[in-house]
Image (cartoon, rainbow, N blue to C red; front, side):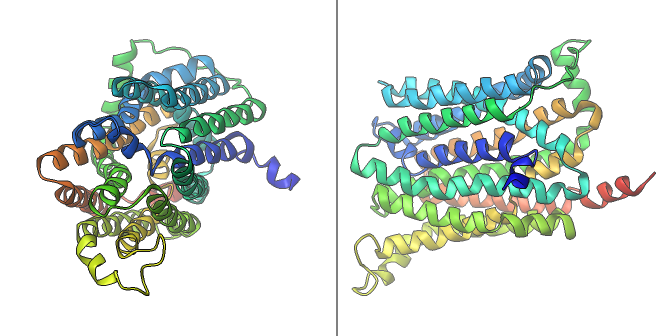
Length: 418
């Protein structure tokens, strides 16, 4: 036990990450339905879910500068405390505008937390072990995502749809306490950019534009399908299939369990065979799983037999569970993959700034998923929205297959050279 706790990643990063993901997992089955309770359109529901991603977008680049100026520990604590306060504040939000603003500000805090822990991980891991280390990080996140939905769905079903937000705030505050105890203050502080904020990042983008455009586009599409499932599954389950909070929570927990079980195999695949061998099948399978969701209503008719329908277990439940499970399996194959790819590509002399740009692109995808689902659903319905997201996921697989170079070989050659 002491050996485990002495691991430089366990207390400073892994445990706070688990707690944050557990808290956010509580909200997965209820957040779209909470937003819909304000009697708004699918487009506005998507915008509310995207608000956190918009906050990330706004905060990513400033977070990299703040990290360099105030140090890693202060940046982590400031970020996680902002997330906690904004999350708990959703319980008291009287209007949908306040919900949007709280999620937006929470996203800015999340950007600061993400960049600081990401830089810590990139510094603390060797290139030839990075895939496994970051897949474990992704796996820790997935454990929280696996446990959270069923708890959140249960809390909402026995109290109201608002109470999971209070629990989320409390769990996130606990993560802040662990980080405050375990994270050491950075010894080195980097001087501010010599040529201004915008020019500084423009120079870094120009120096790395090929990787940021090709791999960045792949990441943009990848994060779009990843975030899109978190709005499609609850809304389709509730609005089309008529499932309740507990059923949706169970489905997302089962999907999260399968996702979670793949984190170590994903790391081994990335470090032994290459990053492509994880990324390409991952997003191809997610595209298939997403495309199956519009078929669940028809498939459920064949499953609504007496020996299938017991309590919460109905034909609709089983049909959506199967599609969500394939999504979980596919996503698990790329556990930690986007962080690994970014860390592989990042120049050592501008690590935090590059990772800020990398996170900016990824957060654009996280924001795009809910917005795309909401916009298409308002125009055409939830089924076409699912198919649109499936097409984006398939595009991600194609980009990683044909346009993004294999970074594992590059890293091994670099490590072996004197």
